[in-house]
Length: 245
Ligand SMILES: [Zn+2]
Picture 1: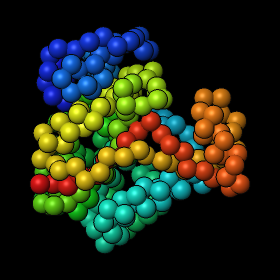
Picture 2: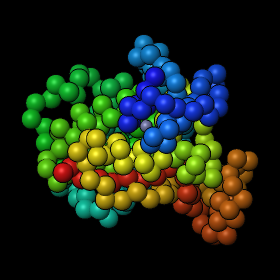
Picture 3: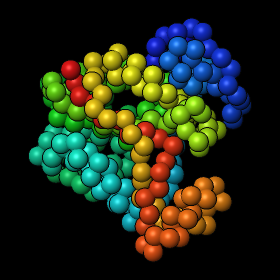
Picture 4: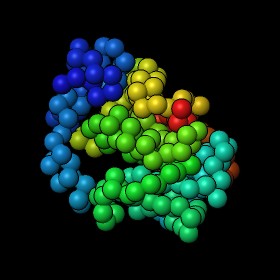
């Protein structure tokens, strides 16, 4: 298959994960599952999908964390916001249930693409892009629902060349792992100007980080030394904020 971001056909084998091939695009550096799972396979997976479990306190903090991040780049409560791929709709529920919308193809009724005239100030996708077999197609469609100059905010999992933490191995859930060049290609292909690409930090219970065998020593030291119940943990993800050109 060709690269789902830049359409390059040349790729290099990276590794097998969960019985599937991961390859790296020789042009944009995106690592992706080849071949992609079929739509039927994904429908089957997500009909009964349970996202990673966190307690209500951390779920609420996570929502506030996202709000603080986007607020720094201009998001206001008064804005019209869509959370696409919202799952349990935590972000909208905890921050602005009356004013914002969440939509998830596997949870919500109806088809979002049929909504007439929606014109958003912000569209966010939180932990969504890596699940999409055609990220460019979905983001392009969403950009049509933004006002000019409006913002998108999302995260991607970084690839092996960009991150010290290797997180592959949740296939067919996590289908893409991103390089900076792949992010640039996605945004320019969708009519978006990048405002920021930076490491994403999320709140976690300090006690769980200390006890987590998979956490890095650095994260455990931070958790132990913080003296707080909650620590902000660096993820292998980038936060990306961009605006519609
Ligand atoms: Zn590519």
